[in-house]
Length: 226
Image (cartoon, rainbow, N blue to C red; front, side):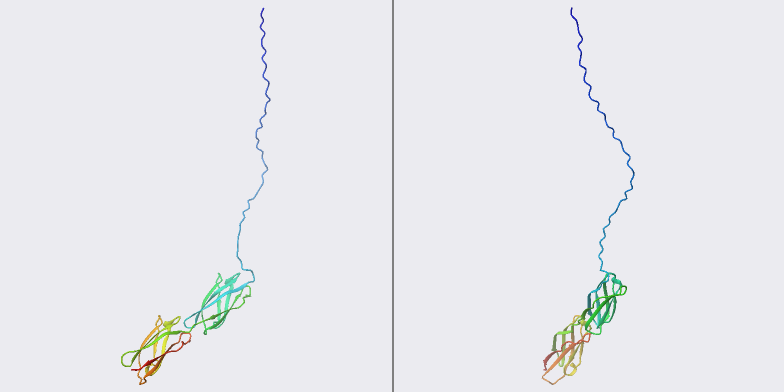
């Protein structure tokens, strides 16, 4: 007799149960954190208590006029005045950027001394000295040309900062004595003069005086009559 026995199947072993952790949002306490803005500032400053006359210039112009200019270093330059003495006297106000410039009148060529004063801080700079330099005019060329009969042409060239304001003055015999000729803006003069003399030779001279009262060296030419 045959019997059937049921086969016992092994039960699968139970796997361990994994517990999943769910993320949870945690409420944090509120904090007030203000934002800070950093600002970098660079400022160039003249040290307090300083007033310095850094430059002083004197540029001559015609008829005793002088252009005075320069610079001042001060915490507040517009509070300053530059006081001048010497051949130029007076005061010049300083601009906010430290520069100053003014037309002044000189008594002649020579020394000018400047001192800057800060009227608000009661500060005074050391003195600075410059000079009004006016070179005298120069006759660089001069010629005397015999024309017809007793007529002679006197011509030449003058070197000067403003030659157009000058007059050439001549010397010599007859009508050449104290004859004059205007100098044009190019520095040239030309005039016809009647010279009557029985001398075989004679001398004609020329010179010019500028608006500052400075006279050139006298130039001369010896002429042959006939």
